[in-house]
Length: 186
Image (cartoon, rainbow, N blue to C red):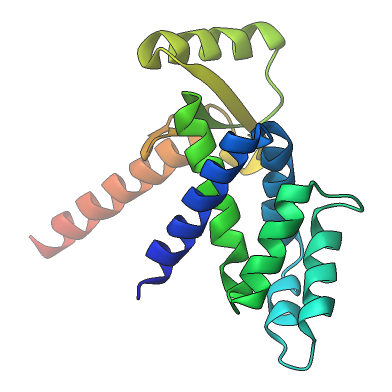
């Protein structure tokens, strides 16, 4: 069976369970923490897949990756996933859970990359623009990248707007390179 389908099924089951229990907000924070742990610690996945570790040790490792204290719903879910030998699916499950939460709450996640931090007024104008287009709330994830030289890169829902100076310089370089090759051949 497709790993994406499996992780989505687990995420949907967890989402339905937490919605029913009224623990969605708490579990969202825990799934964010788990996804962040996988992203920031590349050794977490190999440790979880180690066949020498017992189920109990794997449960504790995942719990520690989230927080010292986790909700009853998350703890039960972790134990279920590890008992079913699906610990390799924990990161995609967490990411799918967050996507389901965002969709259910009409939260749009947008990424904005700039050379330096933007003034709060500019951030609010960007959020307001996205809110009017999507009729939902906006979670703006900001990153700074001095390699952009200037401008910005904005991403949301598989749409990327690259208004960076480095990108424009790359296009100019490519244009001149193509023209140079064409003129040398002729």
